[in-house]
Structures are given as C-alpha cells and as structure tokens.
Image (cartoon, rainbow over all chains, first blue to last red; front, side, top):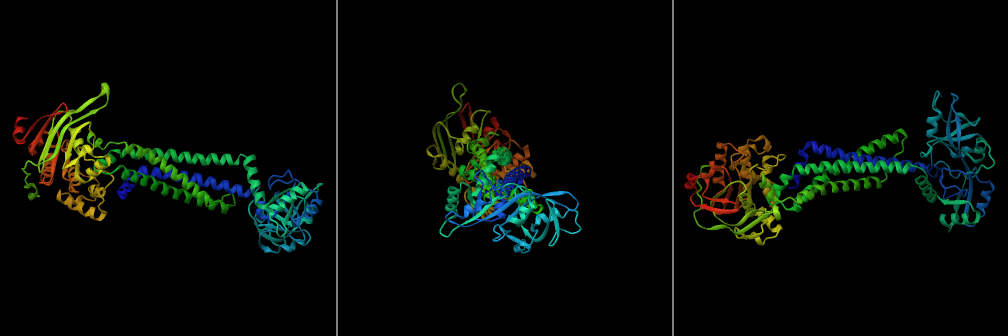
Length: 379
Length: 248
C-alpha cells in the first residue's frame, strides 16, 4: 500500500513538482542564508585564526578582536611579571594603505610579530621562511595581497618584489595563506619593530600582548591572574572568539537580518508545502474514503500520507541542500561572500523540513481521519 | 465465461444477513432526518438481492449500515455471523477488509494507479504480498475479460470497462458480501446489461450474497429478490423479482 501511496503522489506531476519546489526552496533559503551567516561570524574571528596564541591581552575596554585600543609598551613587562605567565610578547595590528604601481591605494591589515619568537606567525607558508622577516623592510604577504596588489603589474606580486606602505618600501620575503577576516582586507606580516616603522606614529602602538600560561596553569587561570593583577583585559583564544561573536550579535544588525531571511524560508516552506499538500489530500479525499470503505485502517492511511509528505520533504531537502552546497562552493571559489557549512546547519534545516512535512501532513491527516467511509456512497 | 454465467444462485433459505429494528437519524432537533425507522431486513446466501425505492427512502443508508461503513442508533445487524452492533470501529474496519467487496456508482478507481494496481488494493489492505496480489489481480482481470488492459490508467477505459475493473477489485479478495451502489446508473442500457450479466455470473455463489441498491428498472430482471423501501422502512419484499418486474 505504501508503494501505491507513493505512486499516487508521483503521478500527480504538477502538485509533486510544486511540493518539491517549495521544500527545496525552503531548504535552500534556510541552509544557504545560515551558511553565509556562519561564514560572516567565522570571518569576524579572522585575526584569532591567523595569529594563534593561548592568551590575548588587550586594553580593558576592548570587547572583540577587531577592535584595537593601543596599550603602553611597558604593559608587556607587567604581564610577563604575573605568576602563571610563561611568556608574553607584543603584537601590532592595524589597517594601513598599500600603494599600487598605478598610484592607487588598497587597504591592508599589517601585523607586527615579536622579533625574537615570531609568535602569531602565519600558520601556512606557501613560499619563503618566516625567519626572513628579520631582514630590514621585509614582509610576508598573504595570497589575497598578491591578488589585490598585483593590479597594474606586468606579473603578479611575488618573492623579492617591492611595494609601498605609508611611503616606506616593503620587500616581499614570503607568501602565506590566511583565513579571511571580517574587513576582507589582506594580511601583511612583519616584525613588531618593522611594523612600527610602517605604521603612522602615535603615542601608544601596542595592539595586543600574546601570552602563554606556565606549566601547571590553564589559560583561563592565567588570563584571570592577568586581569586581576594588571587591570588589562585578558582572554583565552576561545573566550576572545566567543566575546567577538557576542559583540557582533549585540552591536550589528547582521544576525537579525539573516535570521529574518531564514525564518522567511521556513514560513515559505510551510505555506507552499502545507497548502499544496493539503490540496493534494483534498483532491484525493474521495479515494481515501474508498480505501477506508474497503477496510484500510486510519493508521494505514495516516502512514501512507506521512510517507508521501516525508518522501517529498526529503527529496526537496536533498535538492535544496545540494543547491546550497553548490552556491557555497562557488562563493568559496570567488572568495566572497563568506560561507561555512558546519554539520549543525544541514541538521537544523533537515529538522525544519521535517517539521514542515509533519505540519503539512497533519492538516491532511486530520481531514482523512474524520472522513466517514460511508461518504463513498454519497455520489 | 459461459460456465460462470450458468452458475445458478443458491436456493436455500439460509439467511446470512439479519437486520432487526435498525434506526438511524442524521442531525439533531428540528434538522433531524430519520433515515431508517426500525428496519427489518434479511438476505440469503447465494442470492442477488436488490434494494429499490425513491430517492431519500433510506436505501443507501441501509446499505452503508450493512457494509459496516456507517454506525446506527439502535437495532441489530448480523452479517455472516458477525454482529456489527457489538463491534468496535477497529473490528468493523477489519471486517470490511476481509468480508466485503464494494462496487460504487462512480467506480471510485484511483486514476493515478494502473488498472492492475487498483485491483490489488483490497489484497494489499489484507496484507497479501505484492507479487501474489498482482498475480491474483491479473487472474481476476482475465476473469472479467479485461486482462489485456492491466497496465493502463482507468481514465483510458470506457465506463463499462471501468465498472468491470471495479467488479474485479470487489471480488479479488473473495469477499462473502458484495455491496453495489447504483452499479449501472453511470452506464448506457447495453453496457449496464453486460455489467449486470457479469456481476451475476462472477459474484453469485453459495457462500456469497450480492446486494444491489438501484433506481435502474432496466436491471430489475437480474434480481432474485427485491426489497422495496420507502420513508425509512422496508415496505415489501418481492420473493420472485421477475414477476414483480412486470408490476413495475
């Protein structure tokens, strides 16, 4: 009987395609928009992914990693003196303008690493060595810098080439791969001292202090110590990430706008699938009545209707998810907009599609169950 | 086919359906319609019995009660030893699945399924496996001379052919009671006659009973007995339907 139930569904081509489209569109909208949202949220943590350290020390007013309030250079020594701190090094981070050969400027993110330890170094080098940053005026650029700063050049910016930042010459000694950041600007790495030369001079230049806990101390304990003893802000890498995400939720309209679209997808799915499936049931009500008269139980018919609804829902979900993955893959190839698809997203949209199917089928099941089998004798 | 047509009705007085004092009212208060007002009714094994009467006299309501598709307010209904008045809805559903074949006025074939699939439905409802159900459905379609159209959609068939499919569907699970609601009213005279010939040949048998509700006096000659209803009551029973036909 279940096979016949499915045949009844598939044979009604127009309704089947409409149901499938509704489900696929709902799944696409929910998954793709959630994917872009998660991608943006991941981008906000770009600095944390590209400059790895167990503990980040910042000005106490700083709430998220893309926000810099410079500290005094002496704060590094204060942090080093705290019990539980194994080491602490300075880091510069700022947005500068790089000059292209055609005279135009492109914004870049300059990162200054501690000369001795190179803590916060690029995680993946494509060409060159991080140690070469100690050469005067040396910089390591990321793949996005190559793309952005090669405009107007005969060949792409590469090893040994030079360009200008803040009227100072920088020489490329390495190329690395980085994760995208919220601002979408490319990363350029240099040493801390060199970065201070490139950057416009201000009274305080220290952006972050990167630190590590001593043996026997957890990052949480050490961060707590630093906060208590210095009055500075101190976060573990994970806590700084969470604080950054929280800041974006509280201070930008990004989550609301994406949630609105995701909810709209859900509502469209419910409306289209619910209405279409309900009319499919109504059109077949006479046949369901005949089946009931012939001895099909309410349970059997309920299972048939559920099977019809869930079949169309799962196929529609598959199409929607496939389209989301394809669009996401294209986005990633293009470099923007951001897209990420952690396993929770497909699971979440699958649960939403199942809810839509349940809702749509319940409307029809209610009609079928209250149908008297004697209705078939009424012409 | 010839041997099927010559299959005579059983003569005995073995009553297989007893209906006693059945009442059924639709609606309440001023809007109440008393469809059955204490109906007594019997049917015998092996006979083709027709229920006739004017529109609104309660024929279809009585048929629905006997078929176990409609509950009733009072009285007793016993069909092949099954006391319907004591059975739960679940038991009634199982009873219909196992013991009753239905032939409807508008055929009620599912248009999105093939002819063969339509005929397998009662077997599948009874839990018969797909392969066996299809084999038995094919055999039954052959028996009603429409075996070659098994893969077609019902909508591609003429009215008479659709009613043959409906007859095959009603008989395929070998029910003891065949319920026919105006089986010829949607058919022209000749087609109606052929359908009734087929019905009386394949449906009747010693262990079976066929009850036909009809307005169509062109088919009265196929009845062994005829129950005449009016105003929610059985007015008279014509033991020899052929004679009563002349009276009509």
